[in-house]
Amino acid sequence: MQGQPPDLTWKDGDVPVATRFDDPYFSLQDGLAETRHVFLDGNDLPARFHPGFHIAELGFGTGLNLLTAWHAWRQAGIAGPLRFTTFEAFPMAPADVRRARAAFPGLAAEIAALAPHLDAARITLPGLEFRMVEGDARQTLPDWDGAADAWFLDGFSPARNPELWEAPLLQAVHDHTAPGGTAATYTAAGFVRRGLAEAGFEVDRTPGYGRKRHMTRARRR
Figure 1 (cartoon, one colour):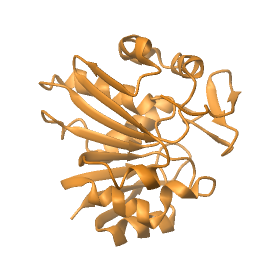
Figure 2: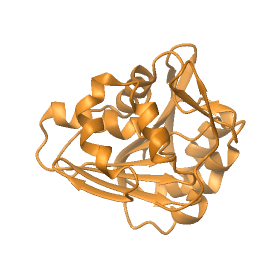
Figure 3: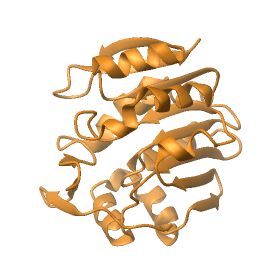
Figure 4: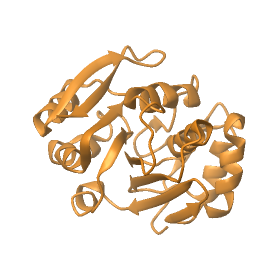
């Protein structure tokens, strides 16, 4: 991977906070539980897993979503690899990734498997085909040749990182979603829900994780 790693501060010893956006990379309460609630449950996973299933993501961060999804995939015993494509403008430095992932001992097997590949944009392992597309997703996603079965929309807060929630980018998400595919995000901001609906998704506001009252689920019509 190329590019300048983000400037970070750390809360509670192991929760990275992006200085640029003044926002933590995962929940201060329980990042793993939040990821399972928002991105797995929000996309009806692992129930929808099938051979060749493809997850795409806006905002890679620490890779917690990847680790969580791959763990669920392995637990489900699906044949073949999970395909996972992520779009990230500011990849974290490997040392920071290692420090952040140490907070999740329940994902130790997946963390160990990925440890030798922290600076790789493409990873092929038993049960996983991973690709990171580095750069501004507003430029890189429209040219992507893939179509995801499920999207993890995990940019920083829309109030702090509006670039990842603009209507043209949400339209590109829709256009790169397989028929019947889904998207989920922790935010329930009105303009995000409207943008997803205008792009062509059926959109629902559902209970969020922890202190967040609501989140958003979407399905391609």
